[in-house]
Image 1 (cartoon, helix red, strand yellow):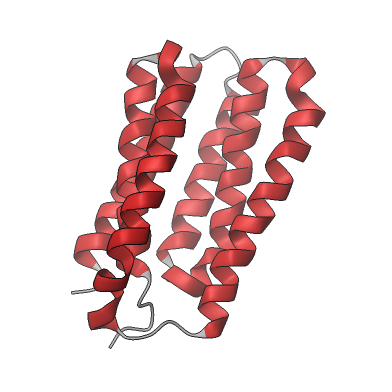
Image 2 (image 1 turned 90 degrees about the vertical axis):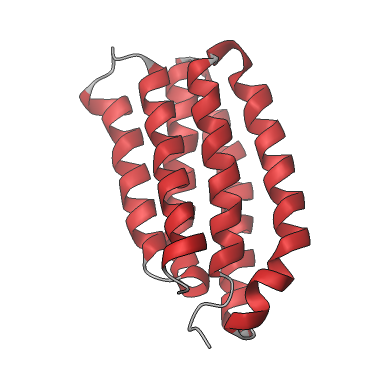
Length: 164
């Protein structure tokens, strides 16, 4: 039994989306297509595999399911709001602002997936913040790549290392 039976499914999702984000850094003209494809692929793969990944770890609590659903709902509401507020400032600011929101939405996911989500949230927020405020002239693809790398690395840890 695990305190976080959803951790492997969350790890699978992060591995897939992280890899697709990293691919988008290498192919910036297809970044959004790769992101959409990654989200679709990660969602389907997780929906199919999550029950068997969670089964050996136990049953998630209603609080964990609510935290996961609430985090996703928070993200779905906040992203369009942020995009409307910053899109006039250009693609770079818009993308980095969205990455910051994604980092924020990881924080309450700790309830569902464990403390590694706080680490992922903080690191992705710092990465996006660096792009927004500290190094505004650095190539966006660098921050995009590191965002994907953080997700991939935490996903691997969640999928392979932590559940042990």
